[in-house]
Length: 299
Image (cartoon, rainbow, N blue to C red; front, side, top):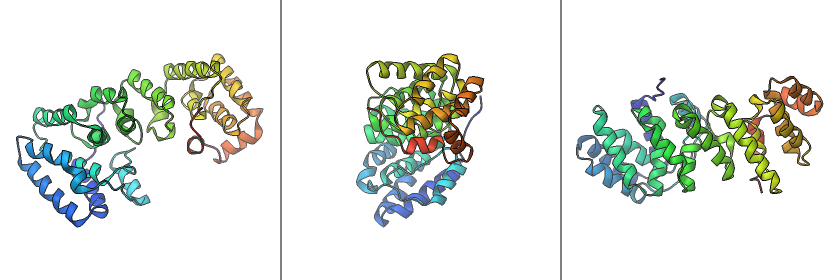
């Protein structure tokens, strides 16, 4: 199995630079002390205490990032995006990266202890940090567990702006995550690796969900058709025809993009019947990021 592992030293340096720029001098002093304690402590006592106390000492300010920061984050680990992190979350990640990791069972025991006792904001930090931690293949079941949570911010931490899911989740868990993202009204364009992990089973699941919504007289987000497009067949193409007939322009645009993704002759012909939308796709004016960032939650 391919292992996606960020460089631990570079990760720690990068995250610390973000924290230093966004946190107070007092917060930086507190974190420096706690990181050193965590590095030197075998029991985990200092880790658990500092992890819990981080919001009180590090603050809860949302990080202010520059475009270069996001580019550096993506270079460190493709898909990694800390743009919604807080200073407390950043401090907690640095504490995790300070745990001695040479002994895998000991490292995983400490991490599992944190997961077992974590409250909501702590779980957010734990799940969001997964793509940076050592032994990433060890967290697949933990990530699948996070998808089933009823805590919205925790689900978002594993589903959105997080490359771990695309790299490690089994297909069933991945499909569940995408469907749940649609169901709770969150943007699909923030799921890293959506195209890479799209599959015929997911396409059918999303089509079934759309039919349930339509039967109840409700709409579906136009983003739903993004993972469906590559797997259009004669049955799914009927869904796309229905979307083309929707009065909202953005729904029609999504239908056109789905047709552009499909290899079915009929899907190409259907797109040819909408030359204005086809031209927008060919010129790059119309794409899935545009659909996602301009979509309202389905009613």
